[in-house]
Length: 218
Image 1 (cartoon, rainbow, N blue to C red):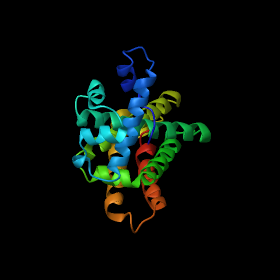
Image 2: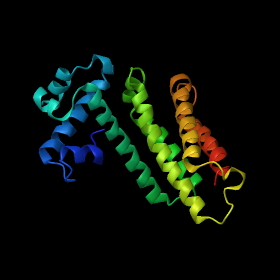
Image 3: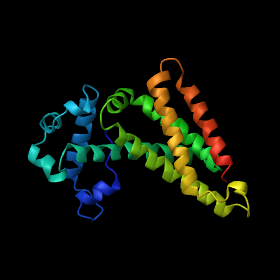
Protein backbone atom coordinates (compact mmCIF):
# COMPACT_ATOMS: atom_id res chain seq x y z
CA UNK A 1 0.00 0.00 0.00
CA UNK A 2 2.58 2.54 -1.02
CA UNK A 3 0.19 4.52 -3.20
CA UNK A 4 -0.28 8.26 -3.57
CA UNK A 5 -2.75 10.11 -1.40
CA UNK A 6 -6.19 11.06 -2.64
CA UNK A 7 -6.65 14.27 -4.56
CA UNK A 8 -8.36 15.98 -1.62
CA UNK A 9 -5.36 15.47 0.63
CA UNK A 10 -2.97 16.36 -2.16
CA UNK A 11 -4.74 19.61 -2.84
CA UNK A 12 -4.58 20.51 0.82
CA UNK A 13 -0.85 19.92 0.88
CA UNK A 14 -0.33 21.80 -2.40
CA UNK A 15 -2.22 24.84 -1.18
CA UNK A 16 -5.11 24.28 -3.56
CA UNK A 17 -2.93 24.47 -6.67
CA UNK A 18 -3.52 20.83 -7.57
CA UNK A 19 0.20 20.00 -7.73
CA UNK A 20 1.78 18.13 -4.84
CA UNK A 21 5.27 19.30 -3.89
CA UNK A 22 7.73 16.44 -4.41
CA UNK A 23 9.06 16.74 -0.87
CA UNK A 24 5.56 16.47 0.54
CA UNK A 25 4.87 13.56 -1.78
CA UNK A 26 7.90 11.73 -0.42
CA UNK A 27 6.86 12.52 3.15
CA UNK A 28 3.37 11.12 2.59
CA UNK A 29 4.68 8.05 0.86
CA UNK A 30 7.18 7.39 3.66
CA UNK A 31 4.49 7.78 6.33
CA UNK A 32 2.02 5.51 4.52
CA UNK A 33 4.63 2.81 3.94
CA UNK A 34 5.85 3.02 7.53
CA UNK A 35 2.34 2.90 8.98
CA UNK A 36 1.52 -0.17 6.88
CA UNK A 37 4.58 -1.99 8.22
CA UNK A 38 3.73 -1.03 11.80
CA UNK A 39 0.07 -2.06 11.47
CA UNK A 40 1.10 -5.47 10.20
CA UNK A 41 3.17 -5.96 13.36
CA UNK A 42 1.04 -4.40 16.09
CA UNK A 43 -2.41 -2.90 16.81
CA UNK A 44 -3.26 0.67 15.89
CA UNK A 45 -3.58 1.61 19.55
CA UNK A 46 0.02 0.69 20.28
CA UNK A 47 1.52 2.78 17.49
CA UNK A 48 2.79 6.16 18.66
CA UNK A 49 3.56 9.15 16.49
CA UNK A 50 7.18 8.95 17.62
CA UNK A 51 7.38 5.33 16.49
CA UNK A 52 5.75 6.18 13.18
CA UNK A 53 8.17 9.03 12.55
CA UNK A 54 11.15 6.83 13.43
CA UNK A 55 9.92 4.10 11.08
CA UNK A 56 9.36 6.66 8.29
CA UNK A 57 12.63 8.43 9.09
CA UNK A 58 11.04 11.87 9.35
CA UNK A 59 10.96 14.44 12.15
CA UNK A 60 7.97 14.78 14.46
CA UNK A 61 7.81 18.46 13.54
CA UNK A 62 7.37 17.42 9.90
CA UNK A 63 4.50 15.11 10.84
CA UNK A 64 2.72 17.89 12.72
CA UNK A 65 3.03 20.27 9.78
CA UNK A 66 0.56 18.04 7.95
CA UNK A 67 -1.52 16.26 10.59
CA UNK A 68 -2.97 17.37 13.91
CA UNK A 69 -2.78 13.92 15.49
CA UNK A 70 -2.68 10.19 14.80
CA UNK A 71 -6.41 9.97 14.15
CA UNK A 72 -6.27 12.62 11.44
CA UNK A 73 -3.34 10.81 9.85
CA UNK A 74 -5.24 7.53 9.97
CA UNK A 75 -8.13 9.04 8.03
CA UNK A 76 -5.61 10.24 5.47
CA UNK A 77 -4.05 6.78 5.45
CA UNK A 78 -7.42 5.16 4.78
CA UNK A 79 -7.97 7.57 1.90
CA UNK A 80 -4.91 6.03 0.23
CA UNK A 81 -6.48 2.60 0.83
CA UNK A 82 -9.68 3.82 -0.79
CA UNK A 83 -7.85 5.41 -3.70
CA UNK A 84 -5.94 2.22 -4.47
CA UNK A 85 -9.16 0.22 -4.46
CA UNK A 86 -10.85 2.82 -6.66
CA UNK A 87 -8.08 2.55 -9.26
CA UNK A 88 -8.47 -1.23 -9.32
CA UNK A 89 -12.20 -0.87 -9.97
CA UNK A 90 -11.57 1.63 -12.76
CA UNK A 91 -9.00 -0.64 -14.38
CA UNK A 92 -11.30 -3.65 -14.20
CA UNK A 93 -14.14 -1.63 -15.72
CA UNK A 94 -11.86 -0.36 -18.50
CA UNK A 95 -10.71 -3.91 -19.27
CA UNK A 96 -14.11 -5.63 -19.13
CA UNK A 97 -16.41 -2.79 -20.29
CA UNK A 98 -19.43 -3.72 -18.10
CA UNK A 99 -22.67 -2.94 -19.91
CA UNK A 100 -25.01 -2.81 -16.91
CA UNK A 101 -24.89 -1.68 -13.26
CA UNK A 102 -25.10 -5.35 -12.23
CA UNK A 103 -22.06 -6.34 -14.30
CA UNK A 104 -20.15 -3.40 -12.85
CA UNK A 105 -21.18 -4.27 -9.29
CA UNK A 106 -20.23 -7.92 -9.72
CA UNK A 107 -16.78 -6.80 -10.81
CA UNK A 108 -16.55 -4.49 -7.81
CA UNK A 109 -17.56 -7.34 -5.48
CA UNK A 110 -14.77 -9.54 -6.85
CA UNK A 111 -12.21 -6.73 -6.57
CA UNK A 112 -13.23 -6.02 -2.97
CA UNK A 113 -12.67 -9.62 -1.90
CA UNK A 114 -9.35 -9.87 -3.75
CA UNK A 115 -8.16 -6.54 -2.39
CA UNK A 116 -8.92 -7.43 1.22
CA UNK A 117 -7.38 -10.88 0.94
CA UNK A 118 -4.21 -9.44 -0.59
CA UNK A 119 -3.91 -7.16 2.45
CA UNK A 120 -4.95 -9.77 5.01
CA UNK A 121 -2.56 -8.89 7.84
CA UNK A 122 -3.33 -5.21 7.50
CA UNK A 123 -7.11 -5.73 7.44
CA UNK A 124 -6.94 -8.06 10.45
CA UNK A 125 -5.02 -5.43 12.39
CA UNK A 126 -7.47 -2.65 11.57
CA UNK A 127 -10.61 -4.72 12.18
CA UNK A 128 -9.35 -5.75 15.61
CA UNK A 129 -8.72 -2.13 16.62
CA UNK A 130 -11.01 0.65 17.78
CA UNK A 131 -10.73 2.39 14.39
CA UNK A 132 -12.28 -0.42 12.35
CA UNK A 133 -15.34 1.74 11.79
CA UNK A 134 -13.27 4.20 9.79
CA UNK A 135 -12.21 1.49 7.34
CA UNK A 136 -15.80 0.34 6.91
CA UNK A 137 -16.91 3.96 6.45
CA UNK A 138 -14.36 4.59 3.69
CA UNK A 139 -15.37 1.44 1.79
CA UNK A 140 -19.07 2.17 2.28
CA UNK A 141 -18.73 5.66 0.81
CA UNK A 142 -16.84 4.32 -2.19
CA UNK A 143 -19.27 1.49 -2.98
CA UNK A 144 -22.33 3.68 -2.38
CA UNK A 145 -21.12 6.45 -4.70
CA UNK A 146 -20.12 4.11 -7.51
CA UNK A 147 -23.32 2.02 -7.43
CA UNK A 148 -25.57 5.09 -7.18
CA UNK A 149 -23.85 6.63 -10.19
CA UNK A 150 -24.30 3.48 -12.26
CA UNK A 151 -27.95 3.04 -11.30
CA UNK A 152 -28.75 6.70 -12.02
CA UNK A 153 -27.05 6.45 -15.43
CA UNK A 154 -28.93 3.25 -16.32
CA UNK A 155 -32.24 4.85 -15.44
CA UNK A 156 -31.47 7.99 -17.43
CA UNK A 157 -30.35 6.09 -20.52
CA UNK A 158 -32.99 3.34 -20.43
CA UNK A 159 -36.56 3.47 -21.75
CA UNK A 160 -39.27 4.97 -19.57
CA UNK A 161 -40.37 2.66 -16.81
CA UNK A 162 -37.25 0.51 -16.73
CA UNK A 163 -37.09 0.80 -12.96
CA UNK A 164 -40.43 -0.96 -12.72
CA UNK A 165 -42.16 -1.22 -9.36
CA UNK A 166 -39.07 0.07 -7.57
CA UNK A 167 -38.89 3.33 -9.52
CA UNK A 168 -39.73 5.21 -6.33
CA UNK A 169 -36.52 4.03 -4.68
CA UNK A 170 -33.79 6.59 -5.25
CA UNK A 171 -30.47 5.51 -6.68
CA UNK A 172 -28.65 6.64 -3.54
CA UNK A 173 -31.02 4.69 -1.26
CA UNK A 174 -30.60 1.52 -3.31
CA UNK A 175 -26.83 2.00 -3.34
CA UNK A 176 -26.73 2.60 0.42
CA UNK A 177 -28.72 -0.54 1.08
CA UNK A 178 -26.47 -2.58 -1.17
CA UNK A 179 -23.21 -1.14 0.21
CA UNK A 180 -24.30 -1.92 3.76
CA UNK A 181 -25.21 -5.47 2.84
CA UNK A 182 -21.97 -6.08 0.98
CA UNK A 183 -19.80 -4.82 3.81
CA UNK A 184 -21.69 -6.64 6.55
CA UNK A 185 -21.63 -9.91 4.60
CA UNK A 186 -17.91 -9.47 3.93
CA UNK A 187 -17.13 -8.65 7.55
CA UNK A 188 -19.09 -11.67 8.82
CA UNK A 189 -17.28 -13.96 6.39
CA UNK A 190 -13.92 -12.44 7.31
CA UNK A 191 -14.40 -12.88 11.04
CA UNK A 192 -16.28 -16.18 11.21
CA UNK A 193 -16.06 -18.19 7.97
CA UNK A 194 -12.76 -17.26 6.34
CA UNK A 195 -11.16 -20.51 7.42
CA UNK A 196 -13.96 -22.75 6.14
CA UNK A 197 -15.27 -20.94 3.05
CA UNK A 198 -13.16 -19.82 0.11
CA UNK A 199 -12.99 -16.24 -1.19
CA UNK A 200 -14.79 -17.46 -4.32
CA UNK A 201 -17.74 -18.55 -2.18
CA UNK A 202 -17.89 -15.07 -0.68
CA UNK A 203 -17.76 -13.52 -4.15
CA UNK A 204 -20.72 -15.65 -5.23
CA UNK A 205 -22.72 -14.61 -2.17
CA UNK A 206 -21.99 -10.93 -2.79
CA UNK A 207 -22.89 -11.19 -6.45
CA UNK A 208 -26.21 -12.87 -5.66
CA UNK A 209 -26.95 -10.14 -3.12
CA UNK A 210 -26.07 -7.49 -5.69
CA UNK A 211 -28.33 -9.10 -8.28
CA UNK A 212 -31.31 -9.08 -5.92
CA UNK A 213 -30.98 -5.36 -5.23
CA UNK A 214 -29.93 -4.02 -8.61
CA UNK A 215 -32.41 -6.02 -10.71
CA UNK A 216 -35.18 -4.58 -8.60
CA UNK A 217 -34.09 -0.98 -9.06
CA UNK A 218 -33.04 -0.53 -12.68
